[in-house]
Every structure is written in structure tokens, then in C-alpha cells.
Amino acid sequence: MQLHKLDKNRISNNKLPHWEYLAFIAAVFVTFIFCVSIGTVKLPWTDVIHYLMDHVFGTVHEYEVASAPQIMTVRVPRVICVALSGMSLALCGCSMQGLLKNPLAEGSTLGVSSGAALGAIVAIAFNINVPFLTLAGPTVMAMLFAFGSIMLILFLAYRLDYSLSTNTIVLLGVIYSMFISSIIMFITTFASEKIRSITFWTMGSLQGSTYTEALMLLAVLLICSAVILSKAEELNAFAIGEDNARSIGIDVRKTRLTILVAVSALIGTCVSIGGSIGFVGLVVPHMTRMIVGPNHKRLLPATLFSGAVFLMIMDLIARVILRPRELPIGAVTSLIGAVLFVFIFAGTRRNTR
Amino acid sequence: MSLLEMKNVTVSYDGYCVLKDASLKLESGDWLMVVGPNGAGKSTLISAAGGNAPYTGEILIGDKERTAMKAREIARRVGTLTQNHSVGYSFSVRELVGLGRYPYRKGIIGGKDEDDARMVEQAIQDVGLGEFADRSLLTLSGGELQRAFIAQLFAQDPNVLMLDEPTNNLDLIFQKEVFDLLKKWVAQKDRAILSVVHDLGLARSYGNKALLLDRGTLVAYGDMDSVFSDDMINGVYKLDMRQWMSKLYSHWVN
Image (cartoon, rainbow over all chains, first blue to last red; front, top):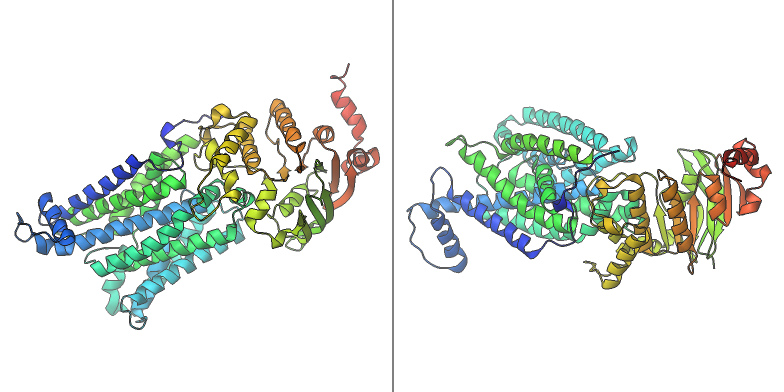
């Protein structure tokens, strides 16, 4: 006889209640103000709010710290990019965990992030560019490689183990990631003059992000999250089982392809802007599931907000912990994410045994 | 018009034929029991009919070929219960059963109407899980979980149920409950069941037709009594079934 712990909070209804939405939005806003105000130079939070008001509503305010506007022209776009990346990566992880019925699925565990990073690196090393769009070369290559990586891993997984078990997928992801990093090392050897920018892609950093990048990320996120959120019910069925999804009339092939295309576009864009940032898509959905339950109609929107909060805090830690030196954000998320993940994993195992 | 018809359905995996030339027809009110020893191709037959295995031949649902139908259209006519449920996330019983209404959703967002909610509650009541509606699937016993999946099928309200071992892992009382439930379900208009059942006693008591398979080949198909004749059953199971069953139940008679 198995004993299960019954957790009332994890039983969910269909929609996120309004107050939960408000709470999530408030959390994102407060974290945003906090993260912008803290850094090498500490700014009062009132200055941050004044700056935002000046730019959004066109008002004019006096600043307590005279250099505040100059500092914030750098910090604000960065923190916006961080928040958007957090949203995207968490949403991707969440939808892959549902789609593959696999709580360990995520961009970095499936090797999708490293695949995308390889795409961006190939574009830089061999000067591949899309005509008229200077930024687009690495982005498009990262998207293509992300999608190619997902397809390759799923193809291999289906060949080896039709049930797509957790172990098979994670093992393949690990092998694939090692394979990719060896290719990246080859390229690094041959394109040594570009070694600095290549290291950036593999470590992940959102230092020096611009409004242009934020806009591009926002556009892709709007489209892809609309697609993914419209598939919330299908994701519920996949999370229960692919056979069950088919039995209730879901076009399994088409739905899976749609979601995977959206996921790879998002991961590709994120990686091309911030490099490969691991563990966000693994840890955030797990923690959010503990709060709102596994129903994707509630989980997906909640994950967007908590992803933003999580990555903004991670970025803050990366900026300030060894001040004035800055850590790559990917190193911080992997470090904190891995530790948190052990606890979460232990918790879920206790629950399901 | 029959509710479901299979014509010369053949299934092979990697060149190895696991089901050969199976044909059958389900009319309203039919409960067709698929029987045979392990490895006979019973589950394969259900998988092929449910679209979970690649097949050659024809499968007609109503008057349409399965391959020419949309997934939702099929789901409104046929519901499939597969073996082995492993549930990974803590969805509630109501969420699982609610998914049964998926083929009736309209529009991209797919709002739920009151009919849907009512059918879901009814289905949960029908399988006797009323007080478990808000419980997590992870906290249910094997029997309760199976009943939750059956409730989803009831909410889906198809014409044909295809059940692979519907009472696998269920104790005797649940077996009786589930079979009585299904008997009531199939007695309604335009409904039929195709099920794989290991227990020949259960199969014979509840079904009106039977299909006997042996190593992928259809040995007998027709009315219960003609398929369950001594020659057929004994030949396939390599056992004097009448003697064995009499011995098995001798203590219970008198």
C-alpha cells in the first residue's frame, strides 16, 4: 500500500483567480524596481519610479542621485531583458514538462539550449548573416539549431524507447550536450580571435542588453506564449499521457509539432540574446506547480510571472555578489538551480511514493 | 449501419505480423469480448482500432473510414481505455474527467458550457467517485484510478468504448461494479463495447458476442455460445476448459 501526502494547494481549479494574478503582477513589479535600484551604485527606489514615470508618462522629476538617469539607461533595458528571458525560459520548460510528461524536461537538460548556442556560435565564427538584419544571423541560426536539436533528440528517444521515459530523454540530453560542447571546443580552436564572444554564448550573460533586444524578445514571446497558452488543455492531456490525449481527440502529432516549434523559437531567441542560461525552465515550473497545481490553464500564466521574478533575482545576485566583478548569469542559475532542484526532486519523490 | 467495422485488419511490427486479417462488426447494443491466451494479439486489435498501432485494411467508424476523419470527430464516436496508467502530476479527478469533454470544445479558447460541467459531475457520480472529485490522482488506489479513467470515457460520451483489460488490478467487488456499470451503459441507444477480457467467466457472463484469437490469427468470431464451444476454447487454450471451470467453481455451487 502506497501512502500519499495530500496537499490541498496542489488541487486546482481551471482558472487562476484574479487576486493571484494581481499578486503575481505585484511581485514582478516590486522585484523589477528592487533589481533596478541595486547595483554598483545604489539608487533609492523612488528614483526608479520617477525615471519610469518620466519615460512612460512624460513627467519631469528631480532625482536624489544626480547620475540616476545615466545609470538607469543601462540598467533598465538589462533588467527588462532578464525578466523577458526568465518568462520565456520558464514557459518553455513548463510546456516541455507537460508535453513529454517528464518533470525533468527543460531546454538545458534536453540539450536544446546548447544546440541553440552552437547555432549562434557557428553564425559568429563563420560570419553567417541575414541580409539587412545585423542581429538576425545568430538569432535565426540559434532558432534553427534549437528546433533541430529537439527533433533529433525526440527522434532518437522514440527509436530507443517508444514510451519516452524520463531516463531515456535525460540521458540522451546529457550525451547530446557533451557532443555539442565538444563541437563548440573545435570551433573555438579554429576561430580563436572570436573566443571572447563565443565564451559569452556558452556562459550566458545579459550584460549590455539593449531596448532593441528587449523588443525582439517581447515580440517573439508574445507570439509564442499566445500559441502555447492556447494549447493549455492539450498540455494537460499530454501530461496525463499521450495515449489518453489521442483517445480524447487531440491531434497528437500536430499539437506536439506546434508546441515544439514555439518552444524552439523562444529558446533560440533567448539564447541569441543572453547566451545559454540553464535550470530556469526546470526549477521555476516546479516551484510554481507547488503553488498553483499542475493544471496548465493556471500553471502556464503563473510560470510566466514567476520566471520573470526568479531570473531578475538571479541576475541581481550575478551582478552584486562579487562586486565590482560580475558573474555570468548562467553560472548563478545553474549553481542555485541545481541545489534547489535536489530539494524539489526529493520532495516530489516523497510525495509520489 | 454498424457503429464500428474492421475489415481485414493486419498489424505488423518490424516485419513480424502480430495480428492477421481480423474482421469484426459492432452493432448497437453489442458487447464483443476479445479473448485468447497471452500474445494472441488482443491488445493489438484494440490499439489498431484506437489508432495507436499502424495497420493495413479498413476500419469504418459509422460510415466513414477512420483515416479520413479528424481526431475530434473520431473521439466523439470512439473512446479508448488503454492498459497501464502512470500518472506523473497531481491533477484532480475532476480535471481528468473534464478532459473527456475535449472533443466537444468549440473555438480556439474552448470555453466550457454548463452541459459539459453537468456531464462531468454525472460521470464522476456514475463511477462512484463523488467524494473523490477534488482529490489528486496521485492519492488514488489502482481501482479508483481506473474508475476515474472510465468516468472520463463516460464524459466523452462516444458510441463505442474500446477497453483493454478494464478491470486489470481491480479486486472482485470493483470488477463486478465496473462490469455492471458498463452493462448499464451499453444498454442505451446506439452504444457498443469492444473489450479485451482475460477472465473467461466474466467475458461469458457479460458479453453477447466473442472473438477468439490465437497467435495473431482470428480463430472464431460470432455469438458467445458458438465461440465458447468446447472445441474452439479447448483447442486454443490447450486445456479442458469445462472441466477446469467446473473444478474452479465447484466449491461455490450448491
